[in-house]
Length: 256
Image (cartoon, rainbow, N blue to C red):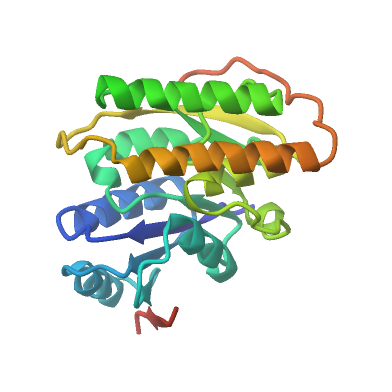
């Protein structure tokens, strides 16, 4: 069976890296899949992100652009991307991914697609600041305690079968959207493999976390804990297998 993937890419004021990221993602998808589509969300950008996205779509019929007149957030873009997606698998990739890793790194996460319902991306290493690294580790530790799973990461490039995620209700939004979706899929009985990807922090763009960002992380944990308590009993943990470390108004425009 042919492998195909829908790539959901929210972008807010990413004029400095969107073209490079899209080129990298298209190259990796072309190498690893028989078919793909890239759905770019210009999420209320005030720079030239929207124009760059439109130009990319005009050059590539596999690229779809959604313009949000106001910022909706990555969770809302992800849910809308699920609705618009048409391929067998789907994944969220941020608009600044070219600042995080190389194309070969992304290909290593794409490679095991098809071996399980889910490919759960985790960080092989993290070149971000000490505080960001440890905040991320704390987030993973807390979610593992809440859920009973032993995942290495929750907010990485998680690749799943589209038909499975389309059956979910999208209860979690914002920062916790990806962790919430992942937890719901595992509880539904989906099996998974894990694939490593580095955060190389290539352009050293990390900034001090704002109070708003910290509140978003805390709110995410609270919501996920509440949903976990009110959901059905935890499913038995997915089998742990060793493997190589590869690893709002919208205007929709499709290329003619």
